[in-house]
Each structure stands twice: as structure tokens, then as C-alpha cells.
Amino acid sequence: MCDRRANQSSDGQHRRPRRVKSPMTIKRQLRRWRRARALGRVDCDGGVAAEFAVVAPAIILIAAGIADFGMLATKSVALAGTTRIGAEYARLHPVDATGIRNSMQSSMAFIPALTFPASFPQSCECDDGMSIACTESCAAAGRPGPNRVFIRIGASQAFTPLVPWPGIPATLSATTEVRLQ
Image (cartoon, rainbow, N blue to C red; front, side, top):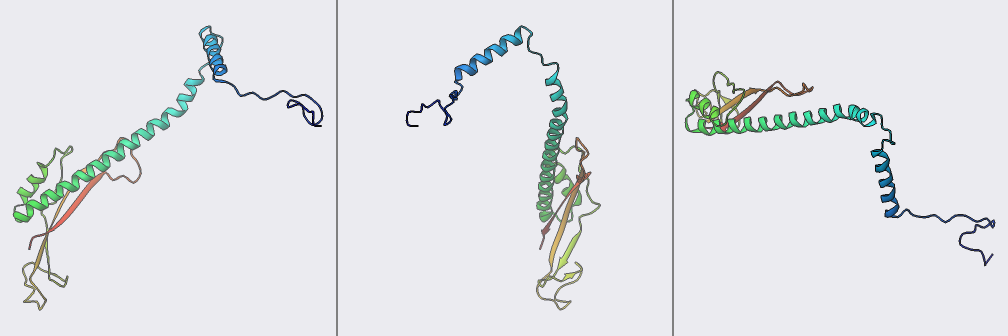
């Protein structure tokens, strides 16, 4: 048993040693395949076209989804920023509804155009958080503190994705509320 060779198994049979393919062997096989391909001996018969036909619709759908969700996020953020710009204008000129609309419309180039509510509603509350009509005074109603006046600025825009995904709204809307007093 002690004089057994490395290529001999325990039953005395010879076995062939395992060899790891060298990079030269792989290069040699690649050269043979290229040569056979150039001579027309390798036959693919449209296998690549069939694989592409199976994978291409999935890749196109994924790309369309990425583009749609990117456009949705971009337009939503732009719309929210526009309502903040309108709220800043409303803080200085709360009764100028046309000026508020113009400041929002001219803040960015929107295609399709923005749509606005008929008016920008104002709401009032006292220091304890209780709502009160803006024509009344908190002190007259027996509530603490002066009136706090808020204005709600809103805008909406139509959104059309490349693919009609379920759950994506056809109209994007954003609202910002700012305290005037």
C-alpha cells in the first residue's frame, strides 16, 4: 500500500489525473469555434432571434415603466413646488387670485397647462385650534388669542403615461396651505 502511486486508486486501477483547462486551451477552443463559424459549419438557425423575441417585450415594458414613474415623480415635485411659489405670493397679496395663478403658471413651463380652483379658500382658527369664521373675532367668541388666518393654494395638471399602468392617476394635484396672520 505504501508504494501506491498518485494515479492509482485503492483497488489498484490506474486513473487519469484531472486537469484544469488552461487559458490557452480556452483560447484555442474559441479560435476553432470562430473558424468553424466563418466557414459555415456552426448552425444557430435563428436561436438568437428567438431569444430576443422572448426577452425584448419585457425589456421594453421595464423601460417604459421606468420612464413613466420618472415623469410622474418629476411632474409631482414640480407641481408641489409651484403651489409653494403661489403660497409665497399669496402671503404678500392674499386677495389677488389672478396674481397667484399667474405666479404659479409663470414659475415653470407646464405642458399641459395647470388648472386652478375657482378661488383660493381662506380659513381661520383661534389659538386653541378651534375653527372660526373669518368674519368673527376669537375674543368676541370667548376663545383665546387672535385669529389665525390660512389660505389654501391648489393646482392640478393632467398626466398621461406611456403605458396605462393601474393605480397611476390621470390628474396630478398639489395643495399648499400658508398662514397669513
